Image (cartoon, rainbow, N blue to C red):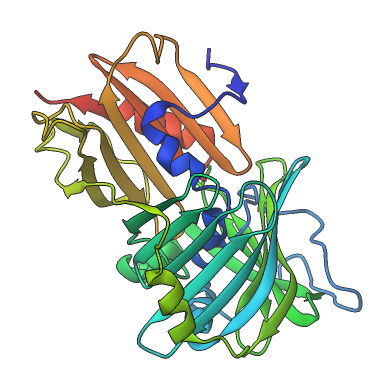
Length: 362
């Protein structure tokens, strides 16, 4: 019997990632703002007033055409706005300044609720300022931007596992937007409903739905100014100004699962390995298989991370654990002398399949 879903904290190995699911969770709005729909879609799509679509009507654009259009919109438009994330009774908001010049993107995200936090990124370079602790976390994040893994995934692969159809239009934050369903073709991934600004294709709203059509999470602009006069030079100066902050740079080392002694005994349909690294700990490098490891997979839209760390009975326990936070789920279990956590915005069954497939090879 599967372990019950809990609201417990995420395991120690994934805490750095889980803590970033607040404000930096907003990068999902640029990265993959889409909604989970059950494989059969909705029997009664919510349409904008005055719009009608027959049940079998298809979109004039394919799924890859819709996603490519949304991706390009983020590279070509500067904007400012207030982004609201809601999940159940929880709600958070952040202010966003986004600018691009055709070769690089810069973005500032400042929380308006909860603990003060400001995140500034330039392409894959990211720094997060936390005024209460006077710390500044400097990182490299490969998965930033709109649908980042789509660019490294064959278009045919995405189309094999997702379909798309336009279901109407609606006004969001003062802008008319196309409503598009990205529907999964199997039970291993969520689907998405996206509101895409008509003229540019910029994503202005996204819902993630559960298997029964319930909203797990919603992300939307409450106000949005397109082509706003955002200064890239000013953001660059703010990014460099770390006076009064302790600068922390996590030490990550690229590796392979095989080098660390791990493999998947079966593949999960549609998901491809994207990266693997270990995190250095105080005292110097650890032997292979002992340093905390993160192995990242993606199907072009959804991503899953496998976190592996040495088992600690005082922190982990022997029972399988499942945690949910909005659309993000995790499944944790013991594998020999290690503790494995599968984390991602996919159904729990997908994470369990990943965790069960991971095995030690030495």
